[in-house]
Image (cartoon, rainbow, N blue to C red; front, side):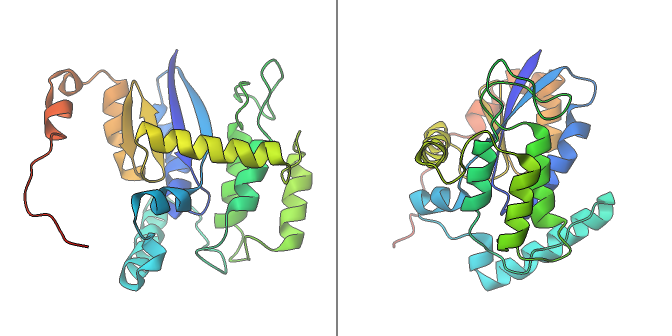
Length: 227
C-alpha cells in the first residue's frame, strides 16, 4: 500500500477544494492518507510572506478563482463571514480528535495512527466552507462541532497546542511552504492544481525517474530583490 501525507489548514479554500478532489486523484490505487493539520500563518511568518487574503487584488482573484473552481466541479463552497479568520480553534480540535493507534477511526477508512481521520477533516472543512456564509469562529457553531466530533483530548489543553506547534515546525523543516501540500515518495506537491501531477507519480510516470524533477529545481542565480 502506498502512503501519502496531506498537509492542510481549514482557513484555505484551496485546501478545501484539494481535499474534495483527492479521492478522484487516488482512484484505482491502494493508498493510506495521513492528514496533518498545520498553521498556515506560521508558514507565512517563517518564510516572510503575506497570505493571499492580505493583498487586496490577490484576495479578490483568489475568491473569484475558487468560486469558479467549485462551480466547474459541482462543489459547494460558501466563504465564511470573516476571512481570513483565526483557525487555531479548528486546528486544535483536529489534533484533539486524532485517532489513537490501536483504536478504530470515526468512519470506515479512517486510519489509526495518532492523526485525525478523513471524516474529522471533512467536518472541519464543511464547517468553514459549507456553512452558508456563517462565522467559522462563532462560539455556538464551534461548540456544536466539538460535540459532534467528541474529541478524545481537550482541544484547549497544552498537549494539543504543543502537537500543533510541533507538526507545523516539522512541516517547515520538510520544505512545506503552503497548503494544501501532499507528500508522496519524498516529493512535495503543492496546491490543489498539483493533484494531476501527484496522480502521475502514483501511476509511475517515467518522468519522475528521468532526473528532471531534480534538475528543474536547481538554483539559477540572477537579480536579487532588495528588501
